[in-house]
Each structure stands twice: as C-alpha cells, then as structure tokens.
Amino acid sequence: MEAGEQLWMPVANALVRFVGVVQTVHRTPGPPREVGGVGAGPLPKVPNMTAIVGITDGNTVVIAGDSAGVGGGVTQPRLDAKVFTNGSYVIGYTSSFRMGQILRYAFKAPVPPEREEDLHAFMCTNFINGVREGLKDGGWASKNNDQEEGGSFLVGVRGRLFEIGHDYQVGELIDGYTAVGCGAEIALGALHATGNADLSLESRAIAALEAAAHFSTGVRAPFTIVRTAKDDG
Image 1 (cartoon, one colour):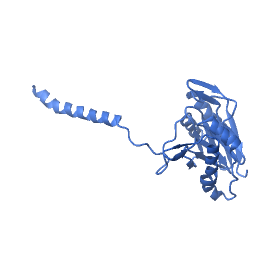
Image 2 (image 1 turned 180 degrees about the horizontal axis):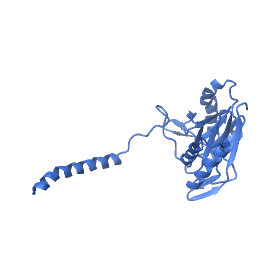
Image 3 (image 1 turned 45 degrees about the vertical axis):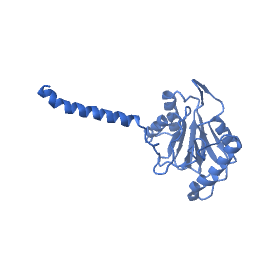
Image 4 (image 1 turned 45 degrees about the horizontal axis):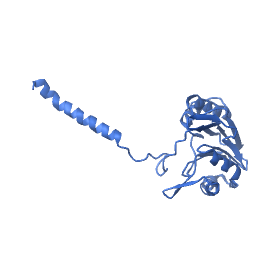
C-alpha cells in the first residue's frame, strides 16, 4: 500500500461509517410530530381535497371555500357548498361532505355566551359536545384506540375564528386567519402575503383560494363566501 493510500483509508472508512449512520437515521421513523405546542395532540389527517379559508378583523369573520369533490383520480365541482351559516355561526369544512351535511342540517348549534371571555371555554365544551353528539347520531364519527375522531372545519362566531381538529381540539390563531384542506399551506402563504395590502377580508380570502386552486389539484372554483359580525347571536 502506498503512503498516500495509508493516509486516505482512515478517512474513507470514516466517510462510509458516516453515510451509513445518515442512511439509518433517514430510514428510521421518529414519533409523530406535535403541532401547536406541547400537548397539541396528533397531527391532523391530511385531506385530498378542499381549501377552506377563514379570516377575521376582530369584528367580522369571513369564511370562504372551494367546490371540489375528489374521488380517486376524478375532481368534480359540486353545488352543495362547503361553507354556510348555522344559527350564530359561519362554518366551513373539509374531511367529508357527509360531515358537512350533518353540521349544516342536523346539528343544533348552541347559543354562544354573552360574555366574550367565556367564548373559548364554551367552544371547547358546549359547542364541541354538541358536534360530537351530532356526528355520532348522523353515523359519521369514529373511534380509534378509544379516542373519538371527527373531521376538520372552521367556525366563526362573535368576531372570532376557531379551527376544529379531527380530535376535536379547538384552536384560535394569533394571526387572525387560518386555512384547512389540501390547499391550506398555499392559502396560508397568500393570506400572509396580503397581510399589509389594502384589501377587504373577502378579497384576501378569494386571493388565497385562487392561489390554492392554481397550485393544488384538489381545489376548484367556484368559491363560496359567508360572513358574520361580532354582535350576531
């Protein structure tokens, strides 16, 4: 063995060991990543359709959604809207058309509290308990390892915007906007980019849906918009 080869071999062996470690780490899955901070729960299920956008200025809540219905490799726009009003609430859903039909037509939405400081606790208890019962009665809810699961949707009420996860957690975002569905990340980028623009809430919501429809195969026009005000109830 030449002197140069003697110097190179330890380095080459170290590189082989390093690459082997990288490959092992790459192949070994870790635990599920939590979102939203400690105790936020499991990752949301990844939908294969829809972009639902919600945005509020503290008084008015606007929720807008697309019309895509996706099955297998086929995408068809549908007439039954994914956003609607139910009592004091505006709601926009993904996950399942059946879930949305139950929330729209069968769910008896409870009257929200008068005091704004009680609203989050109310959403986490009275509202969610009503949703759980409604979905079970409608034959749509499921259980996984003794944990109940529903679907993902947005709710606006009294000027505030809430995101409901498939594990029934209730989130309220600091930014005042959020999105769900397969086009959510694209829509969120558009909402962030228009944050300082002189645009109405509706215009920002439509811009976000247009971006999602441009880049996502599971998002289609036409778009539907609903809105509510802080003193509705």
